[in-house]
Image (spheres, rainbow, N blue to C red):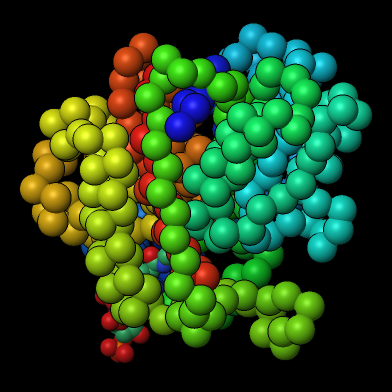
Length: 315
Ligand code: COA
């Protein structure tokens, strides 16, 4: 499998900071309940007039800057989202326009819910490797404005999610070990939101069942990635799970008998930003200097679909 090098990362969060206490004024909840059940302390929501496209473009610009490359060098733009501002054009095409990417660079969205960033990375890698796109670099974005599809009277869901965007500039590399596994179980009953044929605009989730699904699937997915690379947890520096709930991550750690220091968590700051969460975490880690040359990270996404995907990245 041809690998990828992540040459730059970026993130962008919207302007409205919403604390647990803020939400406790809207629904019957408390900071204590939210923190202990989820690990979430706050989240950012889009302010009036702020769009998903602005977040995605902001993260993409930051990733290009960190990579030290210009927009003209981008050969492909893939965005993962389930909350694009419009059914068409795609979020990726909006970013394409905002950044003046070259016309030779195709742009489209993928929707694998919270597995979106992993799916988008593998999609971009495959297209670069297949030779059907020209240009050395791909821009891969995970970006969401979930606040637009939250029922702010439903305490079961409104406390769990946040808005934000993360992006990575990648190129093919055989020096950077890479693996990817993905799967899906067609099941719309546990977690769904909106769409052209739906009368239900808002996110609906069976929290307990989704928790069970994630707790079973994520450890298996980490093991599949490690097995495919003939590695063990000892060979891995960090595991970056989709940041839905700290208790899911704690469960994964226990099941894998792995040390807590290897599991990056930032849901306390952003809540669950779906397709953006892994990309935002990678950018934070990059900024903190955690991703040095040779650092190995397993990322695992899981969510509506049901979908899951894991990837081994080497920096
Ligand atoms: N504040 C206070 N109480 C709340 C609440 C909130 N925000 N949300 C739910 N509750 C209540 C419930 O109504 C229920 O009350 P009841 O016993 O009177 O009926 C009680 O808390 C327990 O609810 P339960 O669903 O059993 O809680 P839980 O421990 O399973 O935690 C979640 C709920 C949503 C935090 C948990 O199920 C979860 O994290 N699921 C996975 C969600 C997820 O990660 N989704 C994204 C996947 S991509």
